[in-house]
Image 1 (spheres, rainbow, N blue to C red):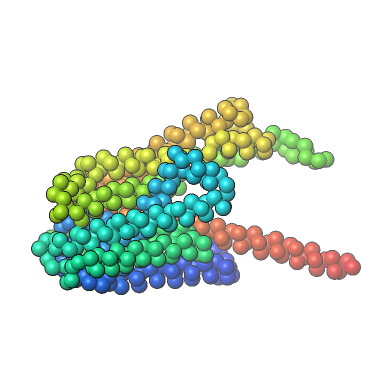
Image 2 (cartoon, rainbow, N blue to C red):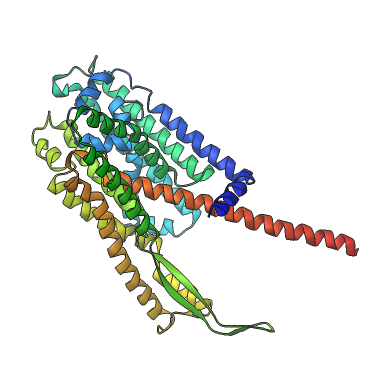
Length: 442
């Protein structure tokens, strides 16, 4: 095992392209983290931080996804969530809109057009959220004087600053995806969540020193955290292998013998997309209601009902997670295409006729796996709210699932780059050897 890890490290040191991508990814994430500390003008950030940490739990998950930018009210206070929300909207529209569906089938050109629409939607959503935040801050929540000079100028300046900050984060995410390693949006959320981990650990340690948390409780939390990580890793690695048999076939003058391969289907085909999408949708109306409830008292009940830990929030969260688990899996994996490719390659599933029957069989298996995956995701995201009570922010299931899932995907992509580098080196060595022998023969 140690020899294998050492070999991977040596391979990584000999892969300049991979090292370049890692440096680009790290540099862009560092730029994002620096922007979190740039304040928005005209706001008393200390007073706002005191209010947000005094018990307004609707902001806990939002602040975690923004890496503490909301608490500091920096230029990145909105985070990447408007972009995620816009992506959700256009992903749903591709199903119901014939024009967008046609664009998606046009390949890279069509996807670029949809991405352009997504960017426009991000600007609109960021403008709406920025205006709501500015209006809420002017109402002096909690009786605190947060805005020094309220008025139209403050609102416009805040909206422009927050919208520009969101657009810059969106650009950083796209650059990470194109030039670095991994999905840029997921890595930005990962960096935001993990940045709050040291402070969370320190708060638990302070609680232990002050006597608020007993030693056995602190130890149980640590064991539970490790067990939860192991539980997530186990389900993320779990596969259902469908056997694919290839009969003897003749290609040219050669006969190839029978062989057997496997079609691997993950239990969680959708990855971390369902919890991210579900949280994004629930955060948007909840935060808007929280911002505007002083001017519209009827929204107070909405803000309460959509707070994390309440029954309405939990039920909606579970429903959205299940929906997006099926929806995203259906977008990413088409059983008809897979069955057609298996048929063209001369393969078949034992006991299943090629073609339509194979597609139906794969679809049945995939539906069962998606059901199990959706239950697993919902359990991880919801369980901490009922079993941990006041420790739910420290061990938030959604945050933990995103962190572990993104970290595993990042490691898998690094391994894929290393494998590609090894194959390129092997093939390059073969071509050089052939050219060398050719010169000798000449």
